[in-house]
Length: 179
Image 1 (tube, rainbow, N blue to C red):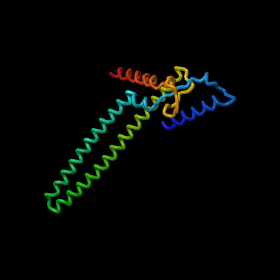
Image 2 (spheres, rainbow, N blue to C red):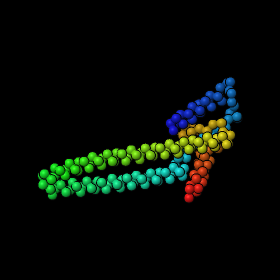
Image 3 (cartoon, rainbow, N blue to C red):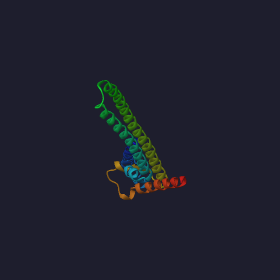
Image 4 (spheres, rainbow, N blue to C red):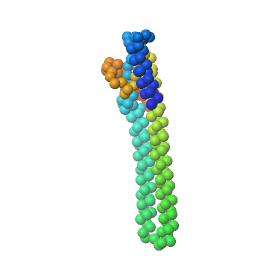
C-alpha cells in the first residue's frame, strides 16, 4: 500500500509538472483526473467488514481458549497450598512447564492472527487497486490519485463512492453465487 501511495504521489507531481511546464505535452483540458480515498473504501467495503468480523470471532475463540488455560494454571497454583514440600516441588515444575507452554501458545496465536489479517488486508487492497484501475479505464480517466494525498480536490472528481459501489456490487454478486 505504501508503494501504491508513493506511486500516486509521484503521479500527481508528474501531472503537475506536465501541465505547468512551458513545453506542456498535455493540456489540463485533455486530462481527466479523479481521486479515491482508499481508507474510506476499505472502511465501507462490505468484504472488508465481513473479513474483520470473522477475524474478530477467531480472535475471541482463541482468547476464550487462552482464558481456559489461565484458569487451569490458577487452579494448579491454588492446589500447591495443600501439598507437602516434595509434592509442591514436582507440581511447581508442572506449573512452570504449563505456563511456558501457555506463553508460547499465546505468542503463536497472536502471530497467526496478525499474519492472517495482514494477508487478507493485502488481498483486499489489491482488489481495491484493481477496481480503481478498471474504473479509470472504463470511464476515460488519465489519472486517479490517492485522495489521502490530495490537499484539495473538487467533490466532482472524487470517485470514491463509485469505486466503492462497484466493489460492493461485485462482492454481493460473488456472495450470492456461493449461497
